[in-house]
Image (tube, rainbow, N blue to C red; front, side, top):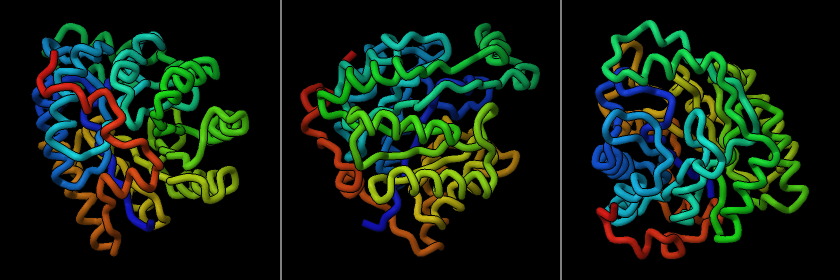
Length: 314
């Protein structure tokens, strides 16, 4: 099926609330942003949770359940719960919401990576006490995803039929996917999410895009669906490059706070609509959620715990 799956990552865990007044923080805001993004054309909603009081990342399944049932009820989008969590979270914390929900899809970081946003710490007059120390601390941050961590996540979720958005920040992460596939722990079709332009990861230039694609083709042949995104100012250029090469794409305020140079995006849906216009100009069609389910061999909405949870459950 030669269609483009558009994913939207609504809030993430690295941008802080002061950076944009449009970053969704509360469960109500995350739900509204997700509904709007789905209506704009996003087939997949990639989801983190935040403390409703001050916007810091939280692994709380209770907070997730204040917006997940509503997204399930009011959209047909594929719910994709992050298992990357946020800085300092244990594997057990990162798995809480996903284990509780057994969603169709979860993110799975395929290796460790250094992450550094410390240079942003002096650019803002922060409104919450936690934000500046949080950013400064990223200079010494390793996003830990060892082989044991990866196996723990797979073994916790795969038996329930959950499949994975495998986030690959550099070429070695593609080889890690192959390592787990060779041992039968990951099964095709693989959703390979190339992540470019993050400080500490692979650069967001055309050579990197080609290298990611060539390596994935060599490792996985026809057994994968390729998607990619670029961080920050690289978001739309990288997505466009990838789409020209047959990839699916991911946008959203987790990946970039901007809609154009120097202009904050007013919503996640605004970014979805922008990439949708570009894809249309390229003669490419968007996959519907059900078409995306078919492409990714997902288990379906009815086999998740959300199918039994009423909207607004706390």
